[in-house]
Length: 318
Image 1 (cartoon, rainbow, N blue to C red):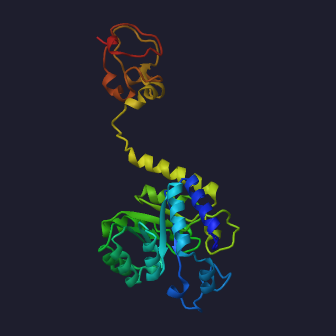
Image 2 (image 1 turned 60 degrees about the vertical axis):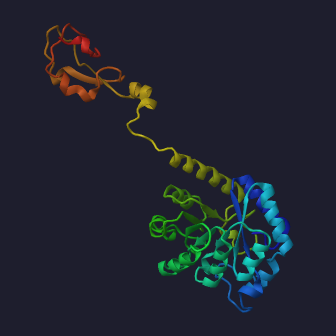
Image 3 (image 1 turned 45 degrees about the vertical axis):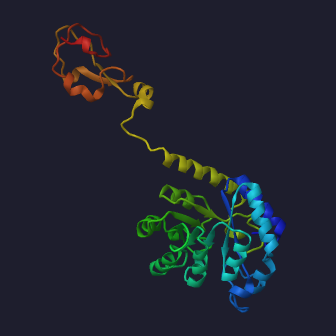
């Protein structure tokens, strides 16, 4: 999203922090270490050759250190996805605290071994991998620091039919580790649903404008929408953190009185009358004998005469 501008990268960090992000994730590309010069670009971005794009937008070691410092200053965690062993070495040199494994590197076991050797936390994206490929990657990364596996679908943008919310639960059972969600859809629905289903972390692309040049801008969120999503995710997490006991009716005492109904007389009744079903009506408020007890009232004898709409109480019966 920064398109190689260090200044824009810093501004994106500050914007993400203001919008409610907890971490900012970059991609660390070293063109010579990760790609051939004639490697094809993805179908969704053909603005320039891939090798040239990585060369033009790369940061120096000093700039990466500056971005990590900018994250600390903004109060967010610095993360980056390394696309080569050399990129891991660079990130280690600046003291990166954790690693995000991009979907295209799941089968790059030498890279995963290098990340595991750091002993630092790793977030493993899964966008284009089979279960067998993920199993192998998880086996390598378990040798290192804490691991999170992230459901992801490598489609840009990702349509609802390919989000794969079902995989979140399957991953949790299969690997017994926290599960996250890397979201390539354009709206908030997938992320909100993922958190409701147990995703602990959500990754979402952020851009100043979807009209910007670059490989991800068109499929990213602009700041206002990102901030709204952050607030909504916080609300979902608060809901999950406060389970409701359906037998705890104390919060609803007044509502039950106002909206539920009591048993009342459907017509004037004489003293000594034995109540039949036709003598009963059911009306608000709900502070008398509850309608649910209507069968227990049928057949009882009145101690005194009552008018129509009289709300029955135990004192009415002989």
